Length: 130
Image (tube, rainbow, N blue to C red; front, side):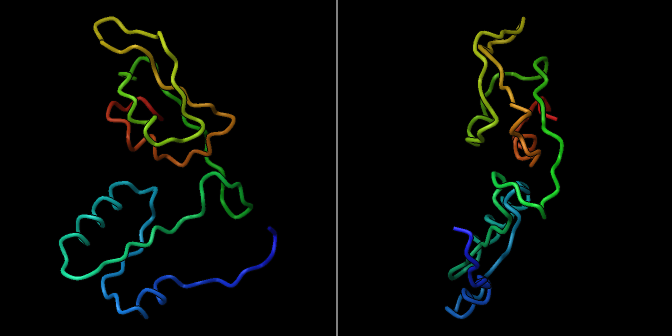
C-alpha cells in the first residue's frame, strides 16, 4: 500500500517464544535449504527455519538484475521438474521431440520476465538450463 511498516526481527520474536533451534536460510540456495531442513528435523524439540529473501517477482531498486536463463532444447529431457516450481516465466512447448528420447516437449523460459534467480537451474538434473 506504500505505507511504511515496522520491521519485525523474526529471529528475536521466535527466540522470545522459547524456540532454541532457529536457522536463517536463503530459499534460493536449494542445497542449503534441504540441508537445513534435514538438520532441524533431526533435532529434539521445536525448530524454526526462516527463509529470508525478497520476493523474486518484485523488482526493487536494491536487487541487482541478473541475466535471464534459457533452456537448451538439445539437453532438455522433458522431465518437467522445472515446471513444478510454478515460476511464471517457465512454460511448456508440446510436440518438440528428440530422437532416441521419450520426451513429448520441452520447457521454455520467457526471457522478458525471467529475473535470473537460478532456482530452475538448480532443479534441472540434465544441465539444460543456464
